[in-house]
Length: 231
Figure 1 (cartoon, rainbow, N blue to C red):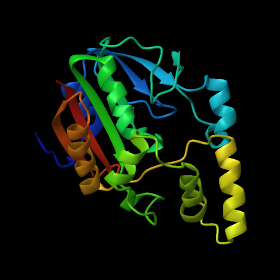
Figure 2 (tube, rainbow, N blue to C red):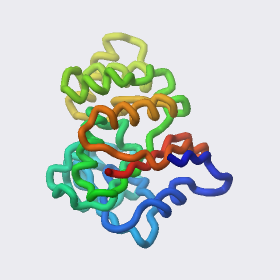
Figure 3 (cartoon, one colour):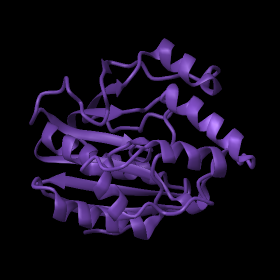
């Protein structure tokens, strides 16, 4: 495993994508921040809604350019993508939006050819609007994997700690509103150390295995970037 720190005046995302990504792959949930890719990598964009519906769902993005969605699908399950068909999958600031991150990684592994690459970027909660939320434990994520958790509680956390609502009734009201529209919040939060722990324990839990090729902290964007390779 190679661990890099961020490099002054260098875009770590581009450095890692240029080194590890090639062939044909997918980026899930790119919205207005697609990962810059080298010329040797060819990507199709996956999202749960077409662009015009994404704009309705996220009115805060009305004035920015969104990538053209090539494939409409559930990014956590990728039902329309054949198994063993992709050279890489990019999930850049997508995994924290997943209700079931372990299952999402399992799905990605199933869609990759042997030796295929998963590029994952997640925000370090210490430097984001999630800073006041508790770190997500692996026990919680394992319960998500076995479908034992009620996801509504995440919307309550979001209303309280991200939207900073103080009144308990208003917290519940907004959480219910977000839940009904299935707004894509950060369901889970990590920092560098907890995400590293998540990766190692996920690898132990899943039947499909992966090598961890790189774990980097990107000071420029205050995020953790991980490169996984399917065995």
